[in-house]
Image 1 (tube, helix red, strand yellow):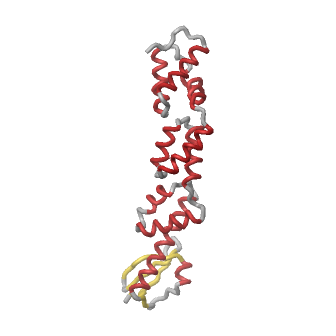
Image 2 (image 1 turned 180 degrees about the vertical axis):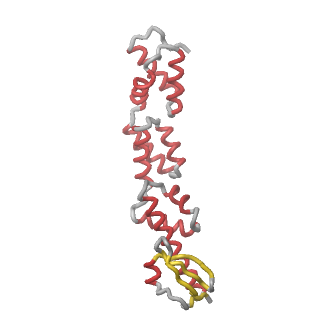
Image 3 (image 1 turned 90 degrees about the horizontal axis):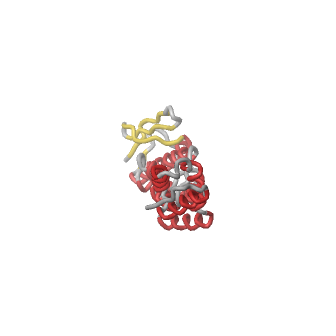
Length: 213
C-alpha cells in the first residue's frame, strides 16, 4: 500500500508528493486537484503506478511545449531531448500526442529547413539530404522533400551565384579556382557541375587562362 504522508508546494509551482515518508515525485497543481491528493490517502499498486505515469506524462508534455516555444524540432530531435529526463514509453506517448495536435510535423519541418539550407546557406540538394538525415528525419520523408525541392532547384544557377559573390576575384588563376572548387565541394556540389560553371564564368569574362586539368 502507498500512503501520501506529505504534500509540499515547490518553487516551480508544482506539488511534491511524499509516499510512505519519502519524496517520490511532483505533480502539477491541476493533477493534484483532479486526483484529490491529500495527506493520508492510500493507493493500491496499480493506482500508484497510474498516478506516477500520468504525472510523468504531464511533466514531459510541459517540457515539450516549452522546448517547442523556442524553436522547431523534428520528432527524433524532441524525443532525444525528452529522453534525458523521462522513460521511453512516456516520451513515445508525448511525441504521438504532439503529432496528433499538429505541433510536430516532420514533413513540414524538412521542407522549411531544406529551403533555408538552399536559400541561406547555399547547400546543394545532396548536402540538404545529409543535414535532414542528421536531424533524424526518416529516409522516406527526406526523399520526398528532396523531390519537392528539386522542382524548385537550379543548382547551376546557384553555383554561379556563389562564384560571382565569393570567388570571382582571382578565378583566372589556378589558386583561385582551387579555392572556389574546395568551397563549393564543401557545400555538397558535384565536381563536374562546379567545373562547368567556373568554365562558363571564365569564358564570359574573357579570362585568358582557361581551366586545364
